[in-house]
Figure 1 (cartoon, rainbow, N blue to C red):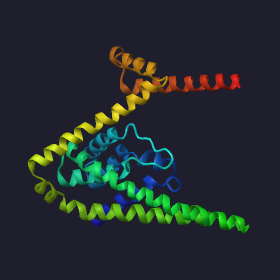
Figure 2 (figure 1 turned 90 degrees about the horizontal axis):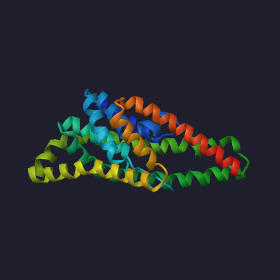
Figure 3 (figure 1 turned 180 degrees about the vertical axis):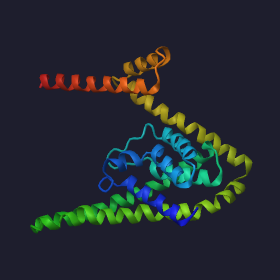
Figure 4 (figure 1 turned 45 degrees about the vertical axis):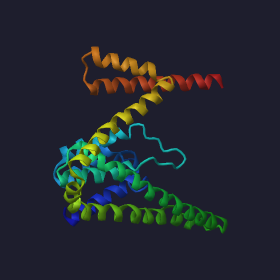
Length: 251
């Protein structure tokens, strides 16, 4: 992997974590392993394999919920490094997923470090507001957090991509056939875990009837997944509007 490719992957990881610089293109799209894996594959010259690895990793995080600052795993870092190491090391999707699991857990350390430092910037903004210097509030609110985010995301990801890829084959050889097979089996189970968590949330609420309707349409209608997706979107919009109007009338 060239230094330019590693730099580009570091920038992608930064954009995936930034909701200000990249806006909706950042956290709400690039952060997802399907997108970050595809972009990683494009940079490394194998977008198809990058997308396949990213999609497999994304299944593990289908039930992803980050409430109150809690982060079960850094899916963006897992998607980028999982795809990068998978492509450069010649791994299949299961082996790349097995590597991505601990990478995602390590990424949570960067997340909590970011939250800790952000609390310092919040106090700085409060201090400026109390002094009546409203024109300077953007510095601790935007500038300093983004600079800190760039250091916490770009640098580790770039270094891991540039130096980690050259050692991946040695790691695979050191693991041996038995250990690698165990990791591949574990990696193959992770997408099922993600789907299982999603089904658990579906059957807890009112969405289970829509799940069965979607299943019947998919099996017996012969429509493509794109068509079913548009139908589901229309139903979701109508249902949300209907529920909102009902709640407003009740109030």
